[in-house]
Amino acid sequence: SGGGGTNNHGGSLAAILSLHGLFVLMLDHGLEYPQFYDSLYRLLHPRVLYTKHRTRFLRLLSKSLLSNSMLPAYAVASFCKRLCRLALAGPPSGGLFAVALVSNLLRKHG
Image 1: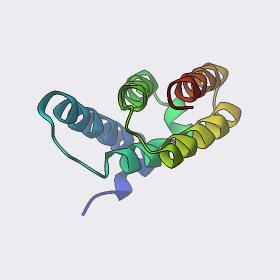
Image 2 (image 1 turned 120 degrees about the vertical axis):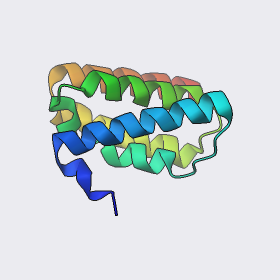
Image 3 (image 1 turned 90 degrees about the vertical axis):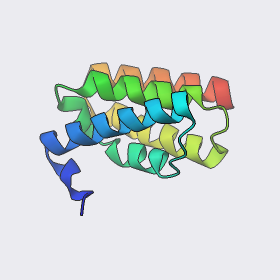
Image 4 (image 1 turned 60 degrees about the vertical axis):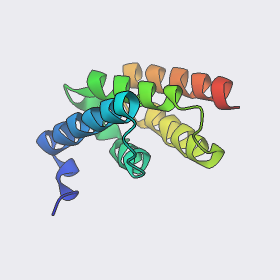
């Protein structure tokens, strides 16, 4: 049974690496994994911006949200809302990234 491991840094790293592998399979090989965006959303917490693997996570987040033009509006809105909260709760560098990503998402999906 998995899922509870994202409360520690090792667990969140494993989750990020797993999601990255799934994303590559989805993008390059047409794998269907409906829970991908739910899993990505659950990792979107201020603590991920304080870890040493935040760059990898932010790159995955950006690629996965901006590469899918078929995301439903409610999902894009949910990610934008969570990213705005992250901008307030995380470090300044993470906040700048979050605001820039929200801007790009609104331009692409808005």
